[in-house]
Length: 161
Image 1 (cartoon, one colour):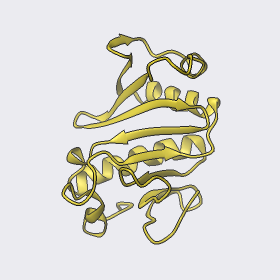
Image 2 (cartoon, one colour):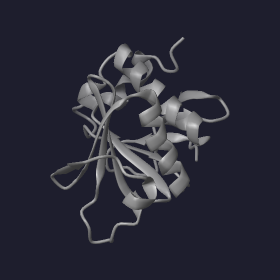
Image 3 (cartoon, rainbow, N blue to C red):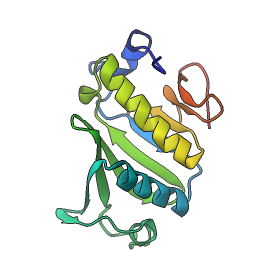
Image 4 (tube, one colour):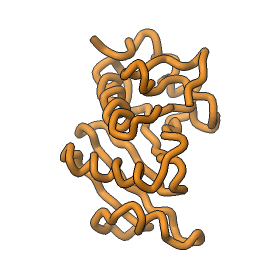
């Protein structure tokens, strides 16, 4: 059974009323959590591309990426859990794993299931919630992986993490 049903959450994926790039985050993270995400990407064999500015490089260890000077361009890791769904991780800080997903790629039950699977994989690996906030509404998650429930839940009326 699906974690979420499209009809119950499609309002949060409406391109006309929300931004197209909601913010996804794992709060209270650490350098080790970032490394666990990098290891997970490699273990799952998800297609990925790491870049610093316009330069594509091999994926470094988390401590290397997160120890870059504060004025350096923010590196990003593009991850495709499936061919048509992209998550872009940005290494802003060690204490929060953050990434964007594109709502245009997440229309319908099949794509929602891919997103839920992706959140679940990350949340289980880190033992932490994975929260999705509408673009520009940081701290107001509408859905996310709940560790205790071991599934992605609708959070619009409650707060987790």
